[in-house]
Length: 382
Ligand code: GLA
Image (cartoon, rainbow, N blue to C red; front, side):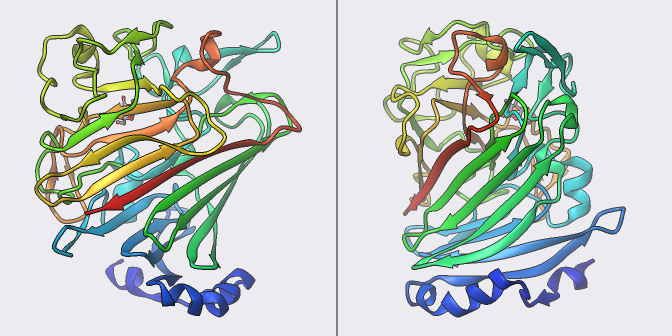
């Protein structure tokens, strides 16, 4: 396993050759053509590869399994690198145990109540895997699928195209969904994610990425000192099963007000019913900008000790801020440390949870002939 993960396989595809040819341009700005290596094998023998990319000071490792960001390294204010995303060192751990570490989430990010919804008068039952509800696409979501990965370089950008076709009826969802996700590392070191999907039957789609951020480095303790700012005046309160009630509540005067910069841990122990339901923050913020054609800046996360800063821009109307509440000290991470509650947080750009059952929420419907397109950009500074 150790040995095989280190075996570097030269990219032999047409895209690989193109990448090699164009690699010089990217190199000039710190970019490096994506390098492929074997990460492991699934029980049925399917090979899972790891792709290493670097550009503008950001180093990224992506797995073909789940499109997982296995590691994301950025420098601190003194130039010292750390892996700021939680994960595992082996494929076996990802398959056995992962709470969506670094993964692509589909077909539907977050929850659908009872896994049920009606489209054009027809009711659908999708896979239920979180109490009574469906979470992150069901039992075998996009995070557990092997994606087809092809590298590219474009001008000074380097990146990966990830393709996955979800067949009609998979996890109960109607329509064959052809999904393309593009991971780009820009010359500034930004990690840009472009999502695209088409269907042959009316369906619902809500794709996102589930990176667990700790800007001080994974396994360095909790993120409660990180400063967070979210450009949202409202959020969607939930019931005890974390399903939105359908109301949009004002953040004013509540622990959910992150409009001014605030430490993640400052209000996390306030006896607010919503924090009891979530065991901390696990809610969808209604971004003030709404749906936009171009990605707009919506959140900033800063670790004061290292100076590392993450800025998120998106076209999406919602942001799930999850404060790592279910990490319970039972997983050993990439660097050999144990992950405990609050050791990382997720900022998942999305449409709102349970939208298929909430007529007042922005629609997640996708019809044949339409193309689903969203973009989220992660920028790093120190
Ligand atoms: C999302 C959900 C959380 C939890 C995590 C994974 O952020 O909202 O409730 O399921 O994923 O553990």
